Image (cartoon, rainbow, N blue to C red):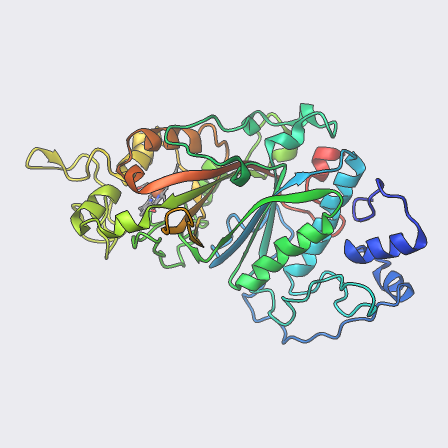
Length: 425
Ligand SMILES: C=CC1=C(C)c2cc3[nH]c(cc4nc(cc5[nH]c(cc1n2)c(C)c5CCC(=O)O)C(CCC(=O)O)=C4C)c(C)c3C=C
Ligand SMILES: [Fe+2]
């Protein structure tokens, strides 16, 4: 039932229902897609691409949604949506249609015909044709506001999905924050990632609207031991001490929701925090190297902790030289370290962004779109950010302007499963 894309809020006439079918990608994943398409005069699309190279395709079905433990791809397209329908069935149908569409896109397939009737818009927008899967992952989540009184799921809201509190140094813009639903599309090809949020928005028409979105052009983390550590826009290696997917014990301890949850539908899921963090790049670029290194607590070129030699050397927070801590008391890595925060860790999966220049100042609007997955953001992200917001030397050079918290349900079991099925049924 949820794979149907028809909005029950609209009255169907033969003309409007066919048009709606086309606009919303009504054939998505349905067994009757071929017959329906033929009846609508839609012609099948001939494949235009080479078979995907091995390693180009990330499995879609599984215990967890892809895009969390997946080795971080290089490009991001992220969007948050507000649900506009109050019809629970229409919302369920939307989540089913998104699941069907995602299951095709991650295999490099269009979500429906591009070559439609000449007087009808293509079902798939077409810009990803021939690009292959490019390691696309699609990760869908639910914001706290989805659990208000509209859809009869208020008693299914996990305690961990309490909205984030206001935090020190927050300069959050509501138009860049929160949302009922989110989708994180990651790929090694920017057009493949963008294709997801564009087509999700089209599928959602009449049921949800995009609230905000963010493109990311370069990963700022490693999530696998097989990956080299990338650099963020401050020029520092970022992700050195991240949780890596190969560390299954750490993933279970810090990232995946387990039986401790008050909401069984979340077992196998995770909680996503996003923060759009603008960097004051012009100020940073005028700062001396030694000061930049003191702010982060690591060397710029090698990425070694101050006082050490190599990138992966142990961070020695107790080390002293001439009566002073080698890693300053306000250095970012000291304040973010698990040792400073009762052992708390999170899986960071952020991206660099730039959205041109700020017309008010002429300065670059660029920075880090921080993404972190964890078991409980109120016990992991919040205390760490509270400490950072109070004392981090980095605060002179950054501003948190956007924020989101989303429950990421577990992975889909196979065709016919959909995002949040266990939540709604
Ligand atoms: C609340 C969590 C964090 C925010 C927000 C955050 C912003 C942020 N970080 C950098 C650059 C670096 N961060 C590094 C390490 C690091 N950062 C966090 C958390 C947040 N960062 C953690 C938990 C850690 C690991 C600490 C440790 O265990 O040692 C590093 C060092 C390299 C690394 O280990 O990843 C850099 C560099 C920026 C620029 C930024 C906001 C714009
Ligand atoms: Fe950090």
